[in-house]
Length: 191
Image (cartoon, rainbow, N blue to C red):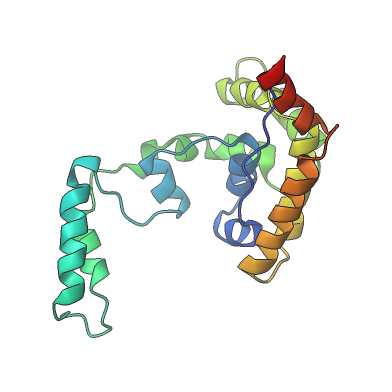
C-alpha cells in the first residue's frame, strides 16, 4: 500500500486542548473532521453553512467599520453567533460516538505497539478498531513512531515557535533520501 506521513500539528497547542486520546488519534490517523467533530473537540467555536459565507464576510466587514455595542470592543462575536448553525449536534459526531474507544486506544499510550495492541484487543467486531488499524497500516511505520514521539515532546514545549521549529526539523528528516517516507512517495509517483 501507499505510505503517508500523518499530518503534523502544533503539538503544544493541540495537546493542551484535546484531552484524552483525541489529539493522538487525530495526529496519527490524519482523519478529517466534520463540523460536529470540530465543535465537539473545541477546535472550532462556530459553524456557518457554505451558502451563508458571503453574507458572513459582508457582515464582518460591516461590523468592523461600525461602532460596536460590546463594551470589550468585540465586534466579531455577535456576528459569528448570528450566522452560527445551532443545529450542529455534537453528540452525534464521530468523535463523540467513538470517544470511549479513542481514549482506550490512544490515551496515555507511550508507543505505537501499545496503540496497535489496544486496537487489536477490541476484536474483529469493533468497526472503530478495525478501520483504525487499516488506516494505520497504510502509513509509514517510522512516521507513526516519530509523530507519537513528537506529540509527547511537543506537549512540553512552551511556544508555537518551538513547535513549528520541531515540526520543520521532523519534516526535513522524513524527506531524506532512503527513508521509508521518501521511498513510499517515490514508489507511488515513479513506479
